[in-house]
Length: 309
Image (cartoon, rainbow, N blue to C red; front, side):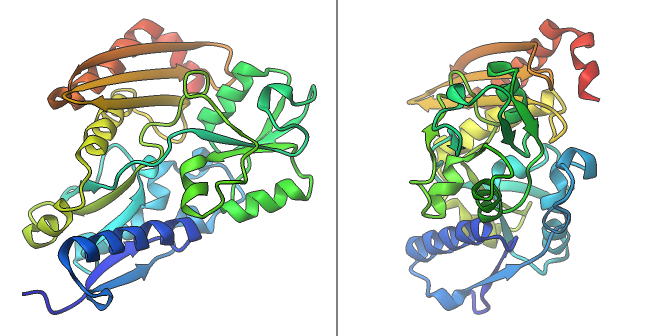
């Protein structure tokens, strides 16, 4: 019988903490455990410490997970809670994504000071975003806009917007909702025109392969529809060697026993793009995503990816 608290690893941002507390609360409810049976362990990651450069410049997605994964592997943590879209497609040996919480809204939120809608921004307005996908999609829709790298915590970006450093910015609506800031967006962007990042809006839990005690605890809060959809999207990403250096969008939806997937790849300037759609049985979710990635890569041709390096 468990006597020591389960140690939950997380980054220290308000959003990361909200996700860790949601995970803890779901586990408490599922197992009838008291709050003191869980300990939230906050770690600083390289991605948190370096905020003056884009993620693509300083190493990509692993920047938000490395320190947590080291403590998972050493046994100092029982499991770690992450934003799924921050996760590299290849995890350290011995670790896996064992559970996903029910997915939040996948849409991107536009927050405009100069205009309430992206398409209505003044000619040459400045938009700040840390995501190469968002940057490319903005340029695709409005090539006249000036798009700059814009990093920092949610409140930091909103403050910079209020100070007039940019005319608009974009954030994941899921994160704003989890922080109680659902009224901040001036527009929610349609995924058909502005498709989300693979795994956007999903909280994942990373644990050790073979740790039956912890993994059986986590299985009770795993949302199977989210698990299948995100597995499909991550397989698409992996087939394209996707990282924070690459503009890739992908979104899968489960309906009954079926899964539908839509993916897009773009050049960083948004001038060229390819789209793909697939559907099939949910049991084949990773294979569907992987095949879509391989197919869109072949369709685009090797020259398309020259600008990704």
